Length: 154
Image (tube, rainbow, N blue to C red; front, side, top):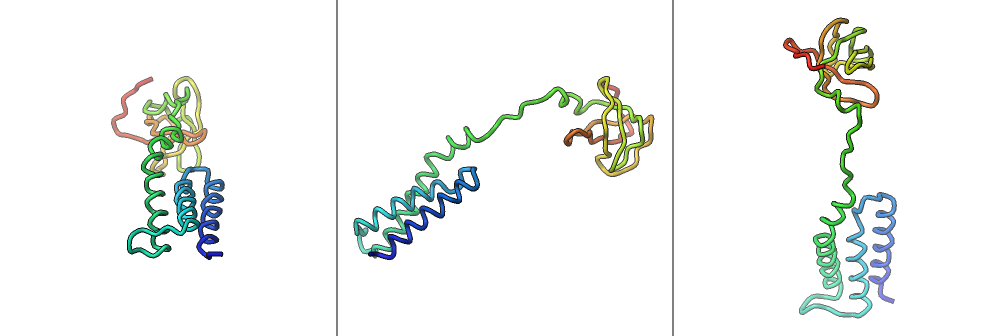
């Protein structure tokens, strides 16, 4: 039996397992290319002046590329999940008042009628009573930054 049959069978299994493990559609196209190369190997077909092994490699590359080009936009559309804003996202960009001094580890701010735990976005110490701007949310903490000119938005 031709050793290349085993090579292409191994490639199918390897790329298939990689696809199952990653769950992100990165190697399924190589499974299709390996399958086409396996059929080429089993048929003994060769292209022009190429050796059967070179023909198999060419079939693998072409079929993998075509499968990628044909399906990647469709897969990307189904794999991309839209960002669904939550109620807490609305505080990003708002001005907050520091209720407990904020540093890179701890602190708290009052914004939108609620007290939040906060961290300084740049690591600086921000004293209580200071007006800060909410930069973003990480988990349940707000990242805030002191600004000389903070406009009150709440």
